[in-house]
Amino acid sequence: MKTSSNGLRDNIRGITSLFRRGGVKRISGLTYKETRGALKVFPENVIRDAITALKRQERTLYGFGGHEALAKRLTQHI
Image (cartoon, rainbow, N blue to C red):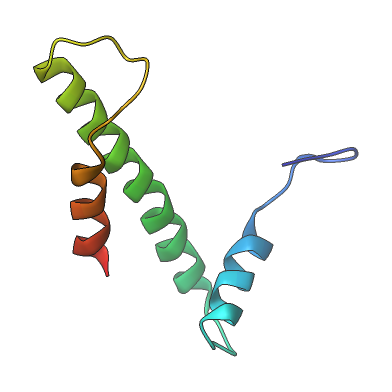
């Protein structure tokens, strides 16, 4: 997100709200770093799976109808 004075702001508030929703009261600094990494890697993996599936089907990258791969990926992380 952009702010008017200092360019891009840190999304630490978004991570904090996720922790609060999960019932966490105190969060160490390393936890923020690990969470940011996990939140970055998961969408990258989903997008890579979508692109791989489309390339195998020899389709252009307009949309992705293979919800099975996404459901499989989601159940692996839960």
